[in-house]
Length: 499
Image (cartoon, rainbow, N blue to C red; front, side):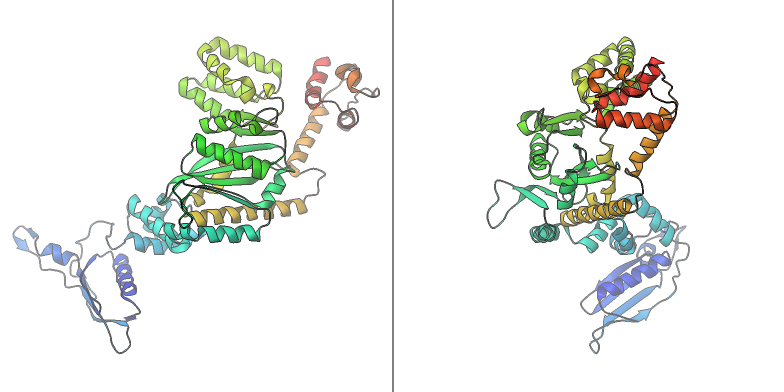
């Protein structure tokens, strides 16, 4: 049996040993000679049980590099071990992290976020060997390097790669912030921001709401990945911008929000930014005029507000009341929840009062957040990029590009096959509202009495009992009489109340 290199020879012997649940030790490794023996041969020579000395195992393999053809050839092979039953454990030292890396490389190509615990179970199922979490983690890391290159090589290739990416995608933006000690010959970047042209263009046709969030990067060089996303007309996620920074600080968030305004949002006003209550985001939204009201509005994620509240106070009912207040669209309901919460949990109400109701309650928002309560869309996209967090930086940027391309391709196909007058999700909401409106009966008073004459340019007929007549009248009021949105939303409740 011949092999092209010593490494290939060693891998073959290791796989044979793993399949037979044996371990070996290399006793000689030279430029032209390689010898390995059974591991128990070294252990048995010094082991005695009941004053009986066991002979060492005879298994051995010897290979030499032939001068005639330059290949490694096995010249001695003992096929059987005479130490049967000596290994009682399912672990095997022959299964190194490098062997695991080559075994899972296909899985990492398909899913760079392949979890370590899944690697452990995969190796156990296929190779029948127990491996530690640490060894599996190193195996995944080596597999990533085999596919995407080392972390150092990625940093070296990054400038050329980014330039090529920007040139091939018109309208895309990348911005760098280098360390102060960088020179013309050697630049060390501190932050990097990038956004793709199609996503920037798409934002200016979507609702003016941006959700921002950060997540940890895994790998040799730690850092944070900052992400800004929005929603299209069908409530689907559109990734807008990314940044890699060292830490989530006031400096890093301020720089990211600055780049987001000048390179993505540009001259669009007003814009609502939804985030958690990180000090860096709050600082950027309060200290830069282009992120202050009325040019922009900062709102907090309701889920984070509730989580922060529950870290100071306990109680399942308090948790429910906080959420009910945040999502209420009617002021009377919000006041009822407020009274209940203030009476039962006065300290918790003081805590929420310091935040400001306009920051987390829909009733006081002024419709700036467009009904979006949480930053779940940004966190959901972070989950989509879960695999990218484990990759070197060039591969990380490359994955964000390909994921964005996939999203736009999917959205284009959805739009092409859409047969509704509105996007599918909006159309379903419209039909549900149509069915709900059909249950209202309001022969008197008519819309003129309900809404007031200042909003109507002509008197409308009384609302009929059929759902289609109700929908037609509502659209006639909204489009021709230009009734404010909050009156249209409350029309159903006003009709119900007037009966």
